[in-house]
Length: 239
Image (cartoon, rainbow, N blue to C red; front, side):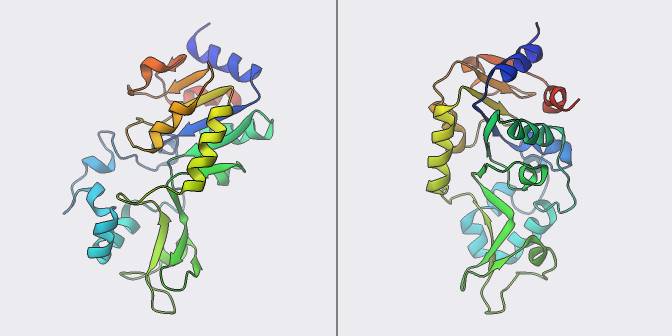
């Protein structure tokens, strides 16, 4: 039995699975990650991407922030990939209890998942900083320069920028699901972004599965390590 077959066997026997995912889940949907050779961190801009999507940069250079944000962070035509669809199916079967994601694209919900904890927020939600009116992604896409509310306030995406803290309720919920899971599947993440990556330390079971094409700092802690594309693994569940 190879590693993927072992994984499928474990999924078949478990009914309290939690999936913790990162950018690699959405690359098959045409959304680039940050750290791969062709990711955003390796493209050339006037400022490094991690600087542009920081809270201090947003406050100081909002026009430059929104130019990058609209150009590189929004993918309104993207569709769920194989992994998204497989996870939705596993939730419908009662096996998957929660998706904890570092992604901000909303594709897990678009695929059909109901219980999604978005650690870093969502590009689909935007709020006026002055009156707190809600705006969809289209308001950002169709704006010229800095998107502004009818009241005159700036419309800010509900995403966690660098230098900003994670939502405490989301952290608490993620810890609870991870701590009680009989199987934790970690996929498509380099596990290099904290505090999000540290959440998997709360897992207490004996079925920690890591699925990633490249090495991660947690490889040695995995009960099952699969160095393969996510689609090759999760494609087994939607055949």
